[in-house]
Image 1 (cartoon, one colour):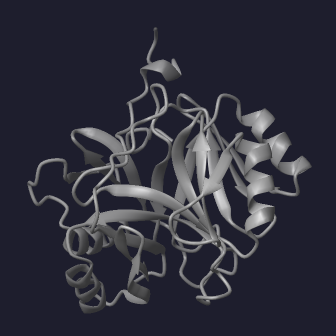
Image 2: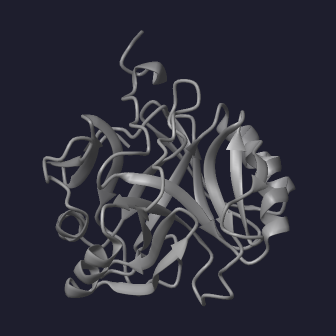
Length: 275
């Protein structure tokens, strides 16, 4: 196999570990519409979640891969996909967010076997934190792939890495924790030595287009980008951007309620400068 073969791309880490992303979640307005769309586009099935009738758990081949909650209107938050980061103490992390000029929108709120916080960093990118209070669960990858990986498009990658590093305790040295590397004007976040997320500069805070404003981009691996785009368009979604990247291609889509997400046939997050 050559270096251009997608099978040789870095294998992404599992969504688990201290200070690591532990889940991805869609905040939407209409739960039934969201289920119909993502079932048609990504082949997901759904089961009621432990958080009440406004939440469901998405599954791929029987494995939990994401959550969807119809709470955008109730909590006055934007329709968006966002990552949740595992933390040991939601109260401590909430204080850290505020101390570093971030915004706490909701929480800490007790839900199920944990405590959740919805927040935004100082450039406006939304994210969540999750403190397990019950039996912690590790989400195993489906087959040989992680369920999702992440890219933060932000104003200044280095400044953002400092914010998240201080808030979440990156580089703490804890087992399973995250490490950051500054390479070619980007930041690569690794967990257990494996790439999980990238942080890229260049977003514009005041841009009218949400794709240009700072945001966490949730990327789902799919076997074929073109067929996934066609399925999204048939189901009321919109193609925002189609890009060729090293090892494959990726498409950013908007679901019918306005939630942005990306599908890719690349196996894992490329090293900085490769996409």
